[in-house]
Amino acid sequence: MKAIIVGGGIGGLAAAVAFHRRGWLVEVLERAPEFTEVGAGLAIQPNGLRALDALGLGDSLRAGGLADPPAGVRSSGGDWLIRNDIDGLKRRFGQWVTVHRADLIDLLRSAVPGQALRPGAHVHQVRPDGTVLHSGGTSTADLVVGADGLHSVTRRSLWPHVPGPRYVGYTTWRFIAPPQPVEGSVETWGRGQRFGHVPMPDGRVYCYLMANAPTASRAGLAELRERFARWHDPIPALLASAREDTVLQHDTYELPNLRTYVRGKAAILGDAAHAMAPNLGQGACQALEDAVTLAHAVDTLGVSAGLAAYDRARRPRTQMIVRRSRQVGAFAHWTSPSLTALRDAAIPLLPRSFFDRSLAPAYSWTI
Image 1 (tube, rainbow, N blue to C red):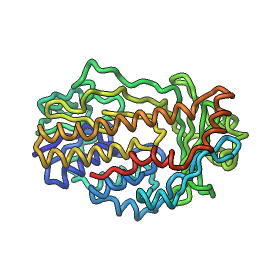
Image 2 (image 1 turned 135 degrees about the horizontal axis):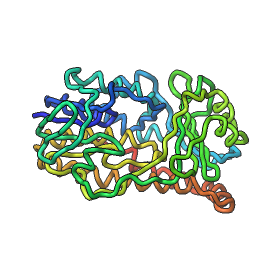
Image 3 (image 1 turned 180 degrees about the horizontal axis):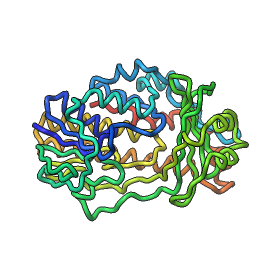
Image 4 (image 1 turned 30 degrees about the vertical axis):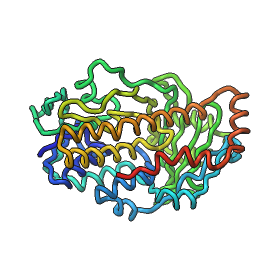
């Protein structure tokens, strides 16, 4: 049995590992000239780590250094809005790991046979019968997996009339700051903008910023330093230590719900199926879950029944995560002074069980 995977990012390489471990031939078509990642940091939450365990790679990631769960959410002045029970989260759900995206790509790529990797392959069309047209010719397989991201050629080929990505109203900056002490993984909410910092095992700090903005608007490091200059420590210091050439900016998009993730001998996964705003930090974790679930279902049940089982298992769950991520972002990006003041006063009064219940569906996944 052979699987063609379109896209060599986290989801695509995870799918390649999953099928390879089950004895399938795999062919990974990646349009970039090499298999790598230019992103910043990434928090792998317990569900994502369990998916990596299913691929035989979880312990390798743990060896790079464990991380604590998110400490909580603060206001721009430094008051705690949400204070998580870190030890309780680890006891209930498991371990967190923080990693550079490039390091995760390297780990996944190392578990795929080198001859299966085809960089520089531009896919033009995917057909439901398992045929893929690309710059190197035509490939056919028993299964095609579209893991080619937000602007997926696979999705457009199989469902040419479905709506495309929609802008959620804010843009995102990411960078990794030099080593410095921070108080765990914390997100801070202001009016229409927020700042998050996550310590990495080597002492560096992964930082992300989001702000309401029109599409394609751009802001450099000097503007960001001015915008967040009066926010609580260590935010100004983290921005002061950053270098302009390390800051990445991308507008934030999500995909409308699809009625199915499968057609014929093809399936889509990760951002190609359910791109989401990064508010829950679940994008990569859901792609890992997708890959493990797809390989298990198809290899166990056969292509047709396995694809149907994959769709039943993954579509409701991932669309729920997309919806919850959207809802969290809405609260964080209010701009009205009165509404944000009400938010900041009301959230600390909510019982901790309220937040625990909201986290449980994302963290408690098992294959």
